[in-house]
Length: 142
Image (cartoon, rainbow, N blue to C red; front, side, top):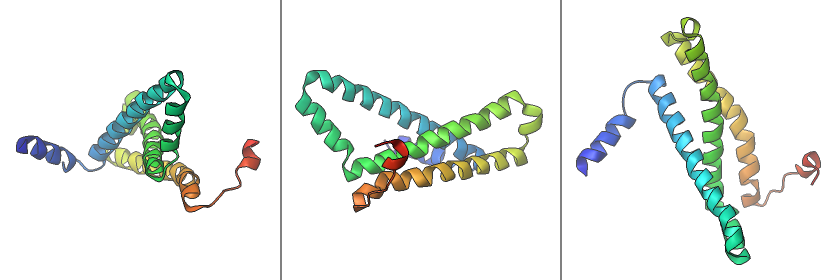
């Protein structure tokens, strides 16, 4: 057990800098998306089992701890998408994007764009927890 913990710790604290953190966040985001997909399939399956169980499951989704997980999922989805574009650029145009300076610049650009998209959606996600109703229904026809 101690060797497994040491191995995980070494993987997390590896000094690969931007490239390592891009890989780690990309992998965590992808795993989070897959786990949510399985949870969503289970959720849809529960509709057929019974309405009470399905409604309880929906109640869990709207709780404060679930909102934190939704925020993590949002960050994972945004980062995974934008980092995927970075990977495509590096794979298809290696002569232009594969040097270390460009890799670092692209990674930081991915983080910046991820935060630009994540922060407003995170605010919208957690606003109901604090009793703030954002007037977004006028934009979405609700």
